[in-house]
Image (cartoon, rainbow over all chains, first blue to last red; front, top):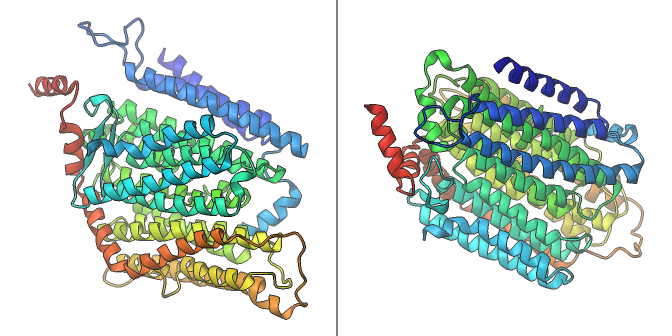
Length: 116
Length: 519
């Protein structure tokens, strides 16, 4: 199970990074979603992997760590909200300029690059 | 008195919905609420500073749950000082946005402004790393709204870059938190400080990765080169008052580095030794240099100021990277200076834009009100480049002094001095093109339909500059204050005991568990 979870995190992260580097808003947003899935699974794994154990402290010796589950819940809510916001802003930018590149357009890049 | 500690978070949280529900279409009432909130925030912050000035560590347990389980807010000298700095900056920024009517150019400026303050205040006060993440997200999501306030294609484009970069940063933050939790089993800062010390020498891989990831996240927030690419276009395209408020956001990153790397991963901890000196310091020097070159190369005034911000953040980071008690004290002094100066400069950029209509650095006929704007620009320029007599000079002197250890530290002294020279030349060039050479150009033409900036705008900018001058005049006292603050940071034992040993719900169980563990 460790291998399965670890490789899932790895594949999701790699795919997410690849998508982010496409530098068009739609792939980038998809890539960021993949990255957040990866990080959610990673946070789960941070509490050690257990199956069939209650996430609560009882007399039983085996239990799942409840805290990472709470953290994941928070992270899911936040990333969901953030994705919604970025979709709206990206749509606005795309509809306004008719261009969905994330990096600066060539003509504005010339002034930007020289400033850099 | 303990409940006052949560007021800087609660107050904007209550007022923001009130503004959106009760005063949605009444800009006048919104302004009153917003200013009242910021004034109250200043009052509370002063109260907290006074309360913690004798070294007391204030603790607020949410829901009365004891520390490692419950979330705590902690107020010590550093966090209350940053809180006061934020509130003072916010007041002048708010006055400017009212004076220049920026808040009327789009919806919900004041609501987002309040949420932004809530996020920043929470980030300064929290004693828990995951809670720090949550407050980062609160301040970021408010900043996304503020960043694209008043719309426009260029601004939306810059907004997309800004949001995406920060989303990646947040993901990285979560990875770091997961790694820390996997290694230490807690995210409470005081608890972590104790547990990280206990990690055995052969099991340090995870915690080292976590420490570096965390440093990376905070370096993104602090716009350290080469992680600064989000800053120039987003700050330049953001509405001026928003950019001025963002001057404190880079300091949140610097604050987090100081907090985490004095308490959880202190310099004498073997696991993470070399993180400051070998990694942070060279990149800080690089930011200082890149910022200065950017100031000289900029073709537009707003870009010039953003690179000045990068350069001054580099200066703060140099002081942090040296990582002695003295250098942290000077970093804190410089941080206050840099926030006020950068805030003032962004507002002055907007004054220039208002009177000229654009920000290109080219010679044009003089405009109405140019003399006063030129004077303000000169004062702010002197401050941020570090020329005497203003606080930038005093701050740089403190940092250089901290880097003087049987003779000057060659790298630090060279880079700081050369970078200062370059940015002085850059600012002098910009100022002379904008204001000085303008006199030699064609006779002034009356520009139709461009209203002069309102007096309130000048009051706001002037207020920030007065704060800067006061920061210079009382430099001795401020330095004493930051020195004691740094001493408190380097001796976090009282912080840790206050957080962990204040009784609350569940603290009985912890004690029982601890004694059981010892047995």
